[in-house]
Length: 304
Image 1 (tube, rainbow, N blue to C red):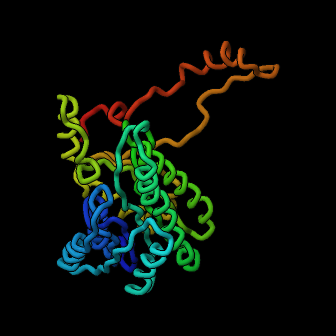
Image 2: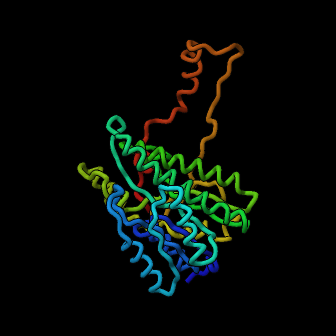
């Protein structure tokens, strides 16, 4: 069993099921003491039960690991302080924050309600900020720490019916880069993982057409555990020089995702006018336009 995280304390939000649980278990197996944060709600954010967190804790303790439970929601500032304090009270420190908690409220943009928008943004984007900010004082004082944020190709590339989720995840990517820049002086790292995995967050994907059915069958091969090794590495001291990056994991593939940079430019000796933009700038730039791709349009090959 690896000891790459010996002596470290990891906080994983949304750790009762799926990817969060897989990461929490893997980090515990790698030697970390783990805080399991999970409020036990449905995918749409309804209900609430401690049982998923209790089951994850029992699994970790079953192989001799150490875990504590917190059931506060990440979507409120005060709760984030309690979540981080659970790590301090239980294990005396905090070294790794994995922002994984999430819900879905999918709808086409023209039908999306304000409640659907706010609930998803509150958990994914605000929650990532709240928990990260609560841990920041501890990371700064000890001059070390690692943030690992779960993002999504729904935001990085695009997807139908997920304007709230896509926008929130793109916001998390920007948040991660800002954390990496602002806290590098304290030896604090911040990276993102866009996971591919079959679970609650993907089980509602339509499977009506032959293409959709084939895609779902491919997703089922990508278990949550496939994302854990990269997360464990990013939380370790071996990743001390890795920060500000966006990775994606698809079964046994690890991708380094691109970040926005200029692709091509045009200039004029005179001031631009709407007409010269139309007649000269856009025709020159058009060949580099991005198509309206979705994630499955870009990742067209079978996961390996």
